[in-house]
Image (cartoon, rainbow, N blue to C red):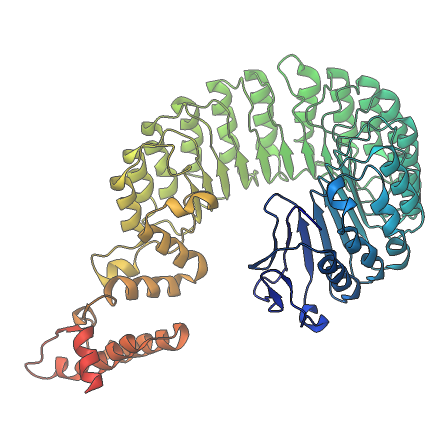
Amino acid sequence: MKGIDGCSIQEEDAHKECNNMQHGGYDDSYSKHEWDDLVKLKFGFGGDSTVSVVSESVDISSGEKWEKCGKVIGGSKRLKELQFSGISDEVMSGDFQDVFIEVPSNRSICTLDFERCNLVNGEIFGMLRPFFKNNYNFESLKLNRCDLGHNGHRFLMIALSEFASLREFELSRCGTDHYGFCFQPLTNHSGLVKLSLRENRIDKNGCDALATLLQDPESELAELSLIDSELDDEKAVILASGLTKNSSLKKLALNKNPFISEIGWKAIFATLESSACVLENLFIQDNWVNDTAQRSLAASLVKNSSLKVLQSNCFYGNIITGSREIFEFLRSHTCELEELYLLDSGFNEYLAICLAKSLADNRSLKCLDLSGTYGITKAGWRALSSVLLSPHSELEILCLSSCGMDNEAVAPIQNALVKNCRLRELSLQNNSGITPKGWEAFSTVLRNPNSALEKLDIRNNSINNYAMISLANSLTENDKLRVLLMGTCGDFSVNAIGWATFSRVLCDLSSVSATYSSNHILEQLCADRFSVMLPEDISFALSANRECSKHQSARQKIIKAHFSGTDVNILPFVEMGLKVMPFVLSWMANDCAIDGINSDELALLFQFVQSVVPCFLPGGQAKTFSRSKAKRRRCK
């Protein structure tokens, strides 16, 4: 095949390399057993004209090689997932179709995943029909950003109608808006658990088919995503007719359907009152839900006992009654909500105070996310901070990102957290109004001996050296915080002075005792992709904290800080007294057994043992021993 785009083949277990692959194509000595452990294959077509197998690069240039690759897939008994990305007409018009010719022979694949593929002519689905019908292990079909066209749509529908084993079906952003996508074949798949149809225009017939699927008493559908599906009132009412009789659905996403108005929302919300309803997650963000519809939601929530998660940004200062009634529901003894996401909502002082009063009496909510919420006044922040002091509150996660907070707004939150012993995660990122002085004051939260905070996100804020030093020093005695996200290691005015404080807190080099008493809990200081920009000593300390127990982390730091390099001083151990020396020797020998040790380290251990006894004899004196001298003595 000439000029074919590249594809990548990846194994789930990357350490198992395919030694039969050599540069220039498949080796003629290929044997199937060498691929027996292959679990996941991904063909990612790009522009580099190569195919990488684990860590090797191989140039694919002839149909014979594609045929062999297809036979590997067809004959595999352990392959579970097959992914294709970027398949074009040019690719399919060449010899790559030999891969699909062999796929129907496979009986182990559970998941087929297509992303950004041109499937307009539907040829692939026609070739895969025997696979769909005969592979009883197959249960997941995903199509994301694929161009189906009329023929692709037709062949897909035929394929779906010929088998009934699907547990998961995803059709996202596939350009089916012009063809009135019909979901009738999905009604055959009563075992379907997860269905995602986001960003596709669903017509009335499609909604009828979905309602039929939901009404099926044998339906196992647990997740349904209809995000940005151009639903209107008529379609919402049809969908609600199916939801009313459904007893399996636990997650429903209706975000970005602005054509649904009061009639449609009232029909949807009324399904929460059904005795069959087991819905646990409802997402209705980026919609227009007016005051009357919100009052309907509040009334339905009072009669519902299953809902655990509600996501909405339909709360605005001009929608008072409905929002207030929903907040009042939070005080109800019937409220079982555990997570509440009020993202990008337009609050005023009154709504903030109403929400705070209700949350203060709530005993079920674990997570509150107000990210992007605007319009909360200083009085509103004072009221919300009182929730953190409520003896009834069980709040563990609080997100206040991009809320336009300044020093005055964050001060009451800070004061409440000093006394709080429940909150585990707090996000304050993107609040540039909080100055370095504000962050210096906020560091007192981390000095709270009863603090339960394990994660603090303060990225994209005004952090300077003084704020860094205050935050670092506050962690000296903190034994809870594991993640402190402070930005991208380049978007705040911090230099070596600020980092040096963190280095000292994580691994104090002044003495063995100080190193042992350093912070061995903190595991992360920035997002993973920026971790390479951290100073080397900080990266080592964070890695030790992350990968080891507190005891082992302290041990690694002590060895690196005090017993590595050219000279090693045993004086710190000698000063501890004779009784502790057996433990010291055991401690060092244990390190040899766990981590392995090279010849220099063996020489050091030998020199250490040889020199311990003289140090405790009359007139004995502790010495500083050189590794190079120890090595020369061992050689002699």
